[in-house]
Length: 178
Image (cartoon, rainbow, N blue to C red; front, side, top):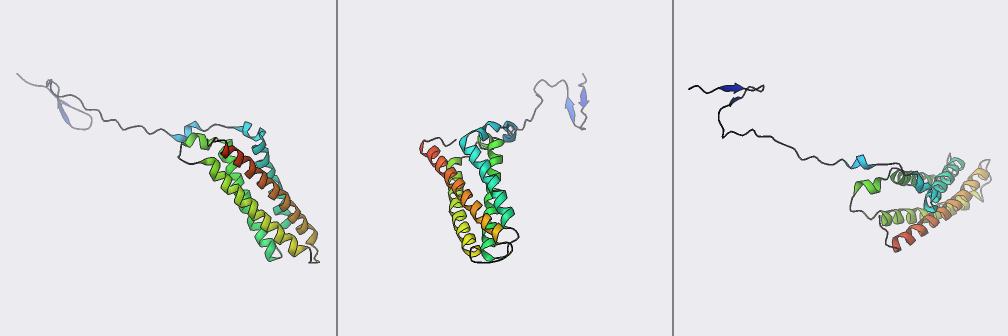
């Protein structure tokens, strides 16, 4: 009696009449892609913290436009604080609008992280507008009026970052970390 040998496509031989030989199927565990659950969350910007974030961005753009180019060391510091606060706030806006914090499921206390970030920028903006106004209030230069306006917008943004920190603190105290 002849047994029939079957050659598969990969060149290996398989004895078709052997009842003990069971085909082996290798499966790789499928890792869920956390980015598939990203959705647009525009409704966040209808809430008070969302409106505050948009105001922080808008006032930050005006402050940066008024302060640049930097003619004094205080303006360098003011622009550094304005630009870094703007970038950080823009990143937080992307995190909220794309619902990244809900989709990543990381063991991060997002509210506390944002509270620390916003509080630091409130303090830095306060230092920056004081330095900006103290330098440009005594300098008589052709660009001193727009630099004083930048300092005033720095005051407004300090208030916005302090208000944002307040609302984040209230949310953190309520225990809503997600």
